[in-house]
Amino acid sequence: MSAEPTAMEAHAKAEEQARSARGAAEALQVGLLGSGTVGKAFAQLLSEREDAIASLTGRRPSVCGTLTRSSGDFKEILASCEVMIELIGGIEPARSYVLEAMRAGKHVVTANKQLLCEHGEELFDAASENGVMLRFEAAVAGVVPVIRVLTESLAGVEVKRIHGIVNGTTNFVLSAMERGADYEHALAEAQANGYAEADPHEDVSGADAAAKMAILARLAFGTPVRLTDVCYEGIEHLISDDLQYARELGLGLKLIGTAERMQGGLSVRVHPAFLYGGHPLASVGGQFNAVTVEADCITEITMSGPGAGGPQTASAVLGDLMSVMSAAEGSSPPPAPPRQPLPLLTDTDSAFYLHMEVADQRGALVAVASVLDRWGASVKSVLQRGLGENARLVMVTHPLSEASLRAAVAEIGELEFVRSPPRAIRVIEEEFA
Ligand SMILES: NC(=O)c1ccc[n+]([C@@H]2O[C@H](COP(=O)([O-])OP(=O)(O)OC[C@H]3O[C@@H](n4cnc5c(N)ncnc54)[C@H](OP(=O)(O)O)[C@@H]3O)[C@@H](O)[C@H]2O)c1
Image 1 (cartoon, rainbow, N blue to C red):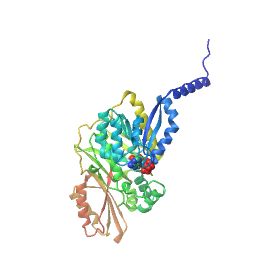
Image 2: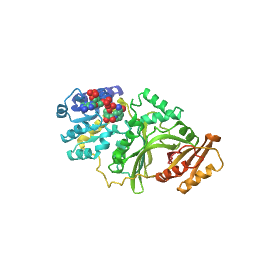
Image 3: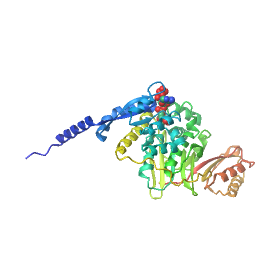
Image 4: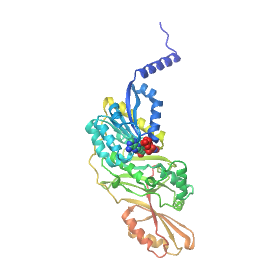
């Protein structure tokens, strides 16, 4: 009668089986386009993890060729790879390479938000026509698995709204401003820490976040959305005063991307917005990204994590490669074609924060409130600070359309006791805690 194996013997046997599985694993050739911040980190991560992946999947992925501006040959890499990883960035030549790879029957993984945002339909069609997979988790919010959650976990859910902090640079700058820094110093701190480019325009103007929200909106609402369909505004005009006063009203400031089903259409926009403490994104600080998805049947879920960085982004790319490898056997469907597209809306209702520099005189508050009332806005909370010529009037309104708010603000700016144009910033009212 044979004795039961001890725990140590069982462990040794499992190790031996894993070793032989790794030895027997069939090679999987991966073509790598780009060897910059993410490309290099991906190649390193893949070589570190290839044994573990071989044991898990029975395939051993390795880079069969790398293309940069000065080395590598695209045709040779294409001929020898099974999966093409595009980490060049920008539109061309990335678009042509990705299309050619799919037409040649290769699965593609990319981290390229610009390409997805501007040519998403062309790429999804090419994937579908050629029966290959196109994965792009790293294109939005880096390592935060929002694409997979939208296309798989929540595929059967009618999404109502997505709010996202999808740009780490601006979140870092706003967090520094919340601690009292002015915009220029906060941006310099982000640059010194490697969280902002030398030319930060794409980030601080809101364009980067807008491209990412276009991709999320397309997936969640089955409606093709391009960058030009997204209304966006950046953070360059914000002053630390706004953040200090808002804190007294229980509000924190973030650059928020929103994609929202409303009034029979779809609104996709990016703008600075105040959040109450009970919103899950209110506590997301520094360079972190986070996305909240709302639907009636799930209430809300929030995912957060690092939105950029070589190793972080590389791990999302590797996750996509493994997803391709495990789906290749059963051939998972490419992203669903657009459902009934929703009309895109430009003017949407919102609550607003208003900051006015006023001469401290009787009747000022009543005069401002009566202009707002004429444009359909009622006041939710008010702060009055300072005396004489330096008085400030800070208000939060209940929701009204942006067009009405702009008209009311123009009228308030004409009142003789208002000393400079009023500042208006959106307020997100939802709270879940
Ligand atoms: N960096 C991040 O934290 C991050 C986060 C999320 C997503 N992403 C996305 O990941 C992608 C790569 O970003 P990255 O930061 O790694 O960029 P990067 O550091 O600028 O690297 C780009 C690489 O592409 C190569 N390349 C550029 N033009 C080329 C051309 N015409 N032909 C062949 N190769 C070319 C470059 O070659 P050379 O080496 O010869 O210059 C370089 O190796 C982008 O789509 C980006 O948006 C990046």
